[in-house]
Every structure is written in structure tokens, then in C-alpha cells.
Amino acid sequence: MRHSELTKSIITEIGGSNNVSSLEHCSTRLRFQLKNLELVKKDNLKAIKGVAGVKDQQGGIQVIIGQHVDEVYDDIMEQYTFTEEQVSHQPQKDQSIKSNPIVKVMNTLADCFVPLIPALIAAGLMSAVVSMISSFKLMDPESTTFRLLELIADGPLYFIAFMVANSSAKRFNVNPYIAMSVVATFMMPELSGLVEEGSKYFSFFGLPFRLVTYSNSIVPIILTVLAQVHVERVMKKVIPKMFATFLEPLLTYFVLAVLTLGIFGPIASYISDGLAFLMNSVVGQYTWLVCGILGASLILLISTGLHYSLMPIIIANFTMVGHDTFWAGPSFCANLALAGAVLAYGFKTKNSNNKQVSIATGLTALLGITEPAIYGVAFVNRKVLLATIIAGGVGGFLSGLLGVNSYGMSPAGLPSIPVLAGPTFVNAIISISVSFILAFIISYIITDKEVEK
Image 1 (cartoon, one colour):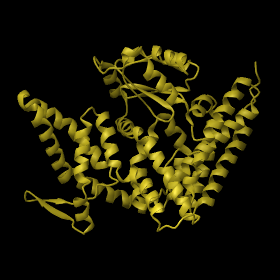
Image 2 (cartoon, rainbow, N blue to C red):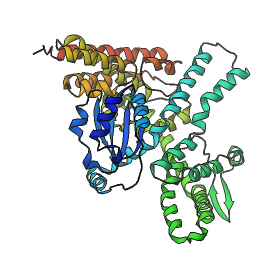
Image 3 (cartoon, rainbow, N blue to C red):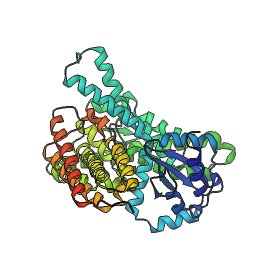
Image 4 (tube, rainbow, N blue to C red):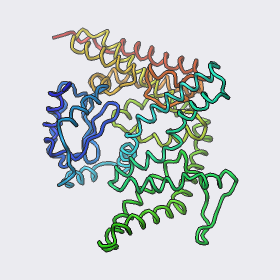
């Protein structure tokens, strides 16, 4: 066990393994779904060496570890077995009453998209490789090798509906295979072929349904899974037990397929049309403003985990225009601003512990792993946070003004710079450099030396 003491301490302070119903992790956080939130000792959790921070989530808690979160996760899963029995809902109910409904929706979206992150990172970096090959003319674009590389890069986004169906179904505790079966129906080439031929409507039992394309789609799938929660509940009530084995899946699948075909698909299409209008009329004309706001606020969004809830908009924008036009620039600027501000504080402070923590977390922030720097330094020293917000906002504004684009999705850090390779690459480097340098200068000027006592 590489982190046996850390894992033991974490499990103890969240109420023991019997209090855990499930566990997942993202790039930096352990995400526990708990049976009784009252058993969690947050102050003790925060005091554990190796824990960068603690955040609430609906029905559970997030423990922020950092870049070795996967190792801690593996150690926990090797040592403990979790069950979903005897879940206590009262604390969860109290939490939901107090929480903002908008925040609850955003947290739910984040829960649906967090499991997709590894696949999206892989696809994003692969897209960056293909973009670099094309930009530097390293390969004949008509060759079968290049075309196969393009397919490898495009595959995850094209079939993202399957992944969203699976993760959303698990989030809402419904059958993921029914949800994916519905998606499979509407990914059939025959249906997409009708759309490509120019057909807009077709008749289903005499009812006119609007034809839409479901590849790269997200909204209709989430709506389908939300409906599945209620459809499954109704089917369990009305279908006799002796017929449940074959009638429940049959009727659930058929009802969901019809609902998606006749209602959710068209609704999603209208939403996509509205989003396209929004992108063209608002984001397109005021990209500098959107990027400036994102650059200044992104670190705060990351600290709450709400940045994941923006993924549907980012993916929709990416699939509509073939590249990102407003997210990557501010993301890189914000993360590098954080790294610059934290490193400057590390170089200036005379407190040996603060120096060690700042330099270590500042270097990881350069790599795109920001939570340790956020919770370990920026939220402890608000002047560092102020420098980050100012420089991130300026860099984001500049990236929007210069029209920085990204040709793949990945964590915003130095190893992921290739996703920016393209016509606006130089503009991206300028924006990122300004953010880092400005944050370093501001932080170094306004922070205190904090000599060791």
C-alpha cells in the first residue's frame, strides 16, 4: 500500500467504510457518496496530511488529494468494500433544502460528466496531435494513416451520447443498458441518413416527428435518463411481478425510445439552435468579455467543482464549429496565473513551511493540477487569490481579444499546450505568458514575507 495511513485516516473521518455507499474519483478528488452525512468530521479531514481540502456534494463529500488521487483511490478500493444498503436520507434532505436550486442542477451535471473526463482528455490530446500533423504538414492528409488518426481522435466525441447515457443512468440509479439501448437506436445509420438527405419530419403512427442528429448530442440523452427514473418507477408499480422480467424492460425501452424520438430529440434540437444563436450573437461578438469573466472567475468555479457543469456548453460549441472558441484560452490563463501567483509567494515568503507548500503546489499548477494550490495557498492567503483573479481576468480578456482557439480538450497546463496548436497558437502563448508574468509580479508585490516565528 502506497498510501495506507492516508486512506485509513480518510475512511475513519468520513464515518467508516460502512458509511460509504460508493466512491469515484476525478483528476484530483475522491468523490464519496455517503449514507449519513452527520458522521463526517470535516475539521479532522482537513487536518489530515495529504488532504488539500474538503468540499460538500449532494449526498456525499469530496476529498481533494491532488495528482496522486488515482493511487489513493486504488488503495481504498483494495482495502474496503462499499454497499448501497441502509442509506440514511435525512441529512441529504436537509442539505438539499439549504442549497441553491441552480447550484444543485450544476452539481448534478458535474456528476454526470466527471466520469467522462479521461475519455475526453484522451480524445482532446489525440485531436491536438492530429492538428499538429496537419499544421506542420507531417503527413499526407489523404493517406489512410492520417484518416485513421482522425477517426481515433473524433470517435469519443461522435459517440459521446453513449458515455453520457451510462454515467447519467448511474448518477440517477436507473438501468444504464436500457439508456444506452435507446441511444443505440438513434445512432443507427438509417436515421442519420434521413437527416443527411434533407428530411426534416417523418411520420410515426401518423404523428409528425422532427428528425434530428444524435451524434455528438448530450441534452436529449440527459432528458431521456431523467424520464427513465419515472418510467421505471411506474413500470414497477403497474406490471405484475410474474410478467416483470420481460415486460418491464420491453415497455421501458419502447416508451423511452418514443419519448426521445418525439419530444426530447426535437427539444434538444431547438436548444441547440438557441445555443448556436447565443454563440454567434453573444459569445461571437463579445468573446473578449466572456473570456475575461471566465479567466477571472475560473479558479473560484474550480474550487466548487462547478466548472464541470459547463462541459455541455463546451462540448456543444466544440462540435458545432470544430474547435473551442472561448474556454481553453481563459482556462490556460487562469491556471497559469494561479501558478505564477503561488510561485511568487513561495519565492518571497521566509516561512519555510509556506515556501515548501507554495513551490510544490505552484509547480503542480503549471501541470494543470490546480486544487492543491487553490486550497493550500490561494484560499489561505487571499492576496495570492487576488493576484490570480486579476491576472487571470486580464489574460482571459486578451485571449478573447486575440481570438485564441483550442483544437482539443484537456486539463489546462503546460503538458497540454499542443491542443492550442493552430492558426492562433502564438496568440495563445502571448495570453498565457501575460497571465503568468502579471500574476507573479502582482503576487510578489502585495504578499507579505511572513518570516518564520
